[in-house]
Amino acid sequence: MDYRTETWIAVDLNFESEKSRGGGKELYLYFDAEFTNRSTGTTLTLPGFWYGGRTFTVRFAPTEPGEWTYRTICPADPSLDARCGTVTADPYSGDLAVYRHGFVTTNGSKHFVYADGTPFFYLGDTHWNMYAEEFDGPGPHAGDTGAESHFRYIVDRRAEQGFTVYQSEPIRTATGYSFPSGHATTAVWRCPPGSGAGSSSGS
Image 1 (cartoon, rainbow, N blue to C red):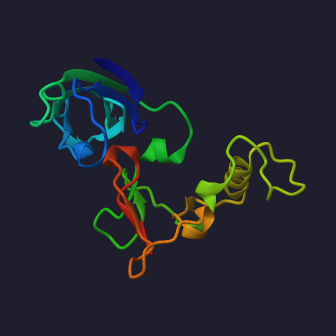
Image 2 (image 1 turned 90 degrees about the vertical axis):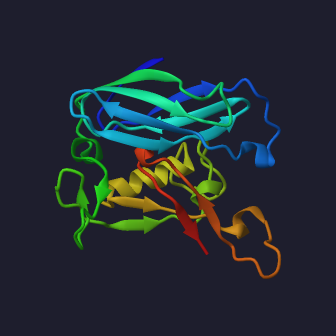
Image 3 (image 1 turned 135 degrees about the vertical axis):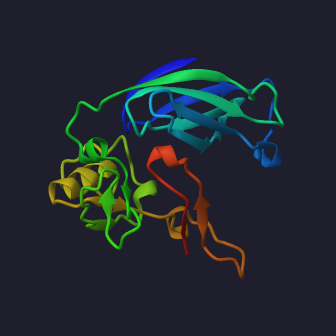
């Protein structure tokens, strides 16, 4: 299948497995995709993830313009293995810094920079209860803000204030979930490098 996007903007590549999976260990599957830029030869290998049902997804954000070929790798499931196609990446046409300059990294230095070397100033705010707040309504804590969405109101407000990073982590008190005695309140997730996020944990 063929896709089209702009540099640094992620696109989801969805693949249907012929196997039904009930959950648990059945979802632990080695499923990657290798992307190669035909013009430059740059190659990126990204992990896929289970999206639900029989669907597995690879999320890819092209780091260079041009045509990228891809090939999936999944030895345990022939219906997901060796699936091929292209992703055409046009130069980014907008004005968001993260898409104009690329993902944030340290580039081997002690300072944050975008992928193209442009300095990045890290000014972050931690929204502790973010994932439990209403996205499609004001919610009980919006007060007299007039917000149509509690979540979006706070994110937009922080952007107006000049914050460059907005972060959160799961907190057990928001859901009432109690971890067994002796277990840390830690959540770990893995996101493909092309998505702009990485492995994270909070205790």
